[in-house]
Amino acid sequence: MSEIREWTRWHTPQKRLMPKELASWLTDTGSLTRRLQQHNTDAFSVHVLGNCWMRALPDECQLLGVPMTQMAFQREVRLMDGDTAKVYARTVVPLHTFQAMKHRFNSLGNRPLGELLFTEPTVKRGPIEIACLKPGQWLYEMAVLEENSRPDELWGRRSHFYLGGKILLVNEIFLPTLMESM
Image (cartoon, rainbow, N blue to C red; front, side, top):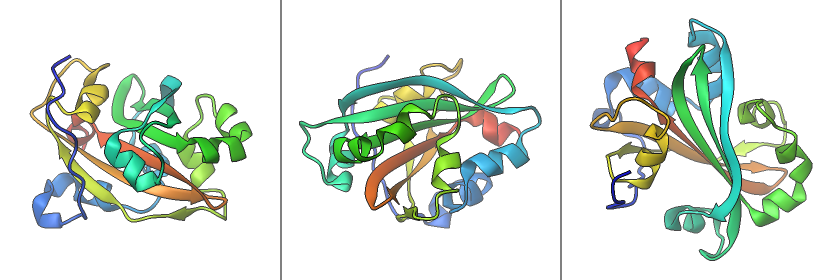
Protein backbone atom coordinates (compact mmCIF):
# COMPACT_ATOMS: atom_id res chain seq x y z
CA MET A 1 0.00 0.00 0.00
CA SER A 2 1.32 3.44 -0.88
CA GLU A 3 2.15 5.99 1.74
CA ILE A 4 -0.83 8.06 2.87
CA ARG A 5 -0.19 11.54 1.50
CA GLU A 6 -3.33 13.47 2.32
CA TRP A 7 -6.80 13.20 3.72
CA THR A 8 -9.97 13.28 1.70
CA ARG A 9 -11.49 16.68 0.91
CA TRP A 10 -15.27 16.46 1.21
CA HIS A 11 -17.58 19.10 -0.25
CA THR A 12 -21.20 19.84 -1.10
CA PRO A 13 -22.22 18.12 -4.35
CA GLN A 14 -21.91 20.27 -7.46
CA LYS A 15 -22.95 18.46 -10.62
CA ARG A 16 -20.39 20.30 -12.76
CA LEU A 17 -17.57 18.88 -10.62
CA MET A 18 -18.56 15.21 -10.67
CA PRO A 19 -18.67 12.61 -13.45
CA LYS A 20 -22.00 12.83 -15.27
CA GLU A 21 -22.58 9.06 -15.11
CA LEU A 22 -22.15 9.03 -11.31
CA ALA A 23 -23.96 12.26 -10.43
CA SER A 24 -27.32 10.62 -9.68
CA TRP A 25 -25.61 7.91 -7.59
CA LEU A 26 -23.61 10.45 -5.59
CA THR A 27 -26.57 12.68 -4.81
CA ASP A 28 -29.37 10.11 -4.34
CA THR A 29 -30.83 10.46 -0.83
CA GLY A 30 -32.63 7.10 -0.96
CA SER A 31 -31.29 3.69 0.01
CA LEU A 32 -28.14 2.74 -1.91
CA THR A 33 -28.90 -0.90 -1.06
CA ARG A 34 -32.29 -0.70 -2.81
CA ARG A 35 -30.82 1.07 -5.82
CA LEU A 36 -28.08 -1.53 -6.19
CA GLN A 37 -30.63 -4.34 -5.86
CA GLN A 38 -32.56 -2.81 -8.78
CA HIS A 39 -29.40 -2.09 -10.82
CA ASN A 40 -27.54 -5.38 -10.33
CA THR A 41 -27.55 -8.08 -12.98
CA ASP A 42 -26.76 -10.84 -10.46
CA ALA A 43 -27.74 -11.33 -6.82
CA PHE A 44 -27.05 -8.46 -4.41
CA SER A 45 -25.06 -9.37 -1.31
CA VAL A 46 -22.95 -7.80 1.39
CA HIS A 47 -19.38 -9.06 1.82
CA VAL A 48 -18.24 -8.04 5.30
CA LEU A 49 -14.55 -7.14 5.31
CA GLY A 50 -14.43 -6.50 9.03
CA ASN A 51 -15.82 -4.98 12.20
CA CYS A 52 -13.33 -3.41 14.56
CA TRP A 53 -12.68 -0.71 17.08
CA MET A 54 -10.23 1.96 15.97
CA ARG A 55 -9.82 5.72 15.95
CA ALA A 56 -11.86 7.55 13.33
CA LEU A 57 -10.10 9.83 10.84
CA PRO A 58 -9.57 13.44 12.03
CA ASP A 59 -12.29 14.89 9.77
CA GLU A 60 -14.68 12.14 10.88
CA CYS A 61 -14.05 12.94 14.55
CA GLN A 62 -14.82 16.58 13.83
CA LEU A 63 -18.05 15.71 11.97
CA LEU A 64 -19.15 13.22 14.64
CA GLY A 65 -18.19 15.50 17.54
CA VAL A 66 -15.93 12.95 19.24
CA PRO A 67 -12.37 13.29 20.56
CA MET A 68 -9.63 12.10 18.19
CA THR A 69 -8.40 9.77 20.92
CA GLN A 70 -11.72 7.94 21.29
CA MET A 71 -12.18 4.58 19.66
CA ALA A 72 -15.14 4.07 17.32
CA PHE A 73 -16.78 0.93 15.98
CA GLN A 74 -16.10 0.59 12.27
CA ARG A 75 -17.73 -1.74 9.79
CA GLU A 76 -16.26 -2.23 6.33
CA VAL A 77 -18.18 -4.00 3.58
CA ARG A 78 -18.25 -4.50 -0.16
CA LEU A 79 -21.67 -4.29 -1.80
CA MET A 80 -21.72 -7.02 -4.41
CA ASP A 81 -23.36 -7.83 -7.75
CA GLY A 82 -22.77 -11.58 -7.85
CA ASP A 83 -18.97 -11.91 -7.52
CA THR A 84 -18.27 -8.28 -8.44
CA ALA A 85 -17.90 -5.51 -5.86
CA LYS A 86 -19.69 -2.31 -6.88
CA VAL A 87 -19.27 -0.22 -3.71
CA TYR A 88 -16.90 -0.15 -0.75
CA ALA A 89 -18.71 1.14 2.35
CA ARG A 90 -17.30 2.10 5.72
CA THR A 91 -19.50 2.99 8.67
CA VAL A 92 -18.12 4.79 11.72
CA VAL A 93 -20.15 4.47 14.92
CA PRO A 94 -19.07 6.59 17.91
CA LEU A 95 -18.81 4.83 21.26
CA HIS A 96 -21.94 6.51 22.74
CA THR A 97 -24.02 5.49 19.68
CA PHE A 98 -22.74 1.91 19.77
CA GLN A 99 -23.39 1.54 23.50
CA ALA A 100 -26.95 2.80 23.10
CA MET A 101 -27.81 0.27 20.40
CA LYS A 102 -25.12 -2.41 20.39
CA HIS A 103 -27.68 -5.17 19.76
CA ARG A 104 -28.51 -3.58 16.38
CA PHE A 105 -24.89 -3.42 15.25
CA ASN A 106 -23.89 -6.81 16.68
CA SER A 107 -26.78 -8.54 14.92
CA LEU A 108 -26.22 -7.04 11.46
CA GLY A 109 -23.98 -9.85 10.21
CA ASN A 110 -23.93 -9.77 6.42
CA ARG A 111 -27.16 -7.80 6.14
CA PRO A 112 -26.90 -4.30 4.66
CA LEU A 113 -26.84 -1.35 7.07
CA GLY A 114 -29.31 0.32 4.69
CA GLU A 115 -31.89 -2.23 5.84
CA LEU A 116 -31.63 -0.72 9.32
CA LEU A 117 -31.30 2.92 8.27
CA PHE A 118 -34.11 3.07 5.74
CA THR A 119 -36.70 1.00 7.61
CA GLU A 120 -36.35 2.71 10.99
CA PRO A 121 -38.82 5.63 11.19
CA THR A 122 -36.67 7.65 13.63
CA VAL A 123 -33.68 7.87 11.24
CA LYS A 124 -32.71 11.31 9.98
CA ARG A 125 -30.06 11.82 7.30
CA GLY A 126 -27.64 14.73 7.29
CA PRO A 127 -26.42 16.38 4.11
CA ILE A 128 -24.49 14.39 1.52
CA GLU A 129 -20.86 15.33 0.94
CA ILE A 130 -18.86 14.05 -2.01
CA ALA A 131 -15.17 13.63 -2.77
CA CYS A 132 -12.82 12.56 -5.51
CA LEU A 133 -10.38 10.08 -3.96
CA LYS A 134 -6.85 9.67 -5.29
CA PRO A 135 -4.19 7.00 -4.75
CA GLY A 136 -2.41 7.61 -1.46
CA GLN A 137 -5.51 8.83 0.36
CA TRP A 138 -6.57 6.53 3.18
CA LEU A 139 -10.15 5.88 1.99
CA TYR A 140 -8.95 5.24 -1.57
CA GLU A 141 -6.43 2.67 -0.32
CA MET A 142 -9.04 0.92 1.84
CA ALA A 143 -11.52 0.84 -1.06
CA VAL A 144 -9.09 -0.82 -3.50
CA LEU A 145 -7.44 -3.18 -1.02
CA GLU A 146 -9.56 -6.16 -2.17
CA GLU A 147 -9.72 -5.06 -5.83
CA ASN A 148 -7.60 -6.06 -8.82
CA SER A 149 -7.18 -2.55 -10.19
CA ARG A 150 -6.05 0.86 -9.01
CA PRO A 151 -7.91 3.51 -10.99
CA ASP A 152 -6.63 7.10 -11.22
CA GLU A 153 -9.53 8.21 -9.02
CA LEU A 154 -12.61 7.00 -7.19
CA TRP A 155 -15.69 8.97 -6.28
CA GLY A 156 -17.39 8.68 -2.95
CA ARG A 157 -20.00 10.21 -0.75
CA ARG A 158 -20.66 10.36 2.95
CA SER A 159 -23.58 11.24 5.17
CA HIS A 160 -24.14 11.25 8.86
CA PHE A 161 -27.33 9.67 10.13
CA TYR A 162 -29.17 10.07 13.40
CA LEU A 163 -30.60 6.76 14.60
CA GLY A 164 -32.73 7.23 17.70
CA GLY A 165 -31.05 10.63 18.09
CA LYS A 166 -27.54 9.05 18.04
CA ILE A 167 -25.06 9.90 15.26
CA LEU A 168 -23.14 7.60 12.91
CA LEU A 169 -21.28 8.20 9.63
CA VAL A 170 -21.55 6.22 6.39
CA ASN A 171 -18.89 6.47 3.65
CA GLU A 172 -19.72 4.91 0.26
CA ILE A 173 -17.00 4.66 -2.36
CA PHE A 174 -18.15 3.78 -5.88
CA LEU A 175 -15.88 1.28 -7.61
CA PRO A 176 -15.15 1.39 -11.38
CA THR A 177 -17.20 -1.79 -11.87
CA LEU A 178 -20.36 0.21 -11.11
CA MET A 179 -19.71 2.65 -13.96
CA GLU A 180 -18.77 -0.21 -16.28
CA SER A 181 -22.24 -1.70 -15.77
CA MET A 182 -24.13 1.47 -16.71
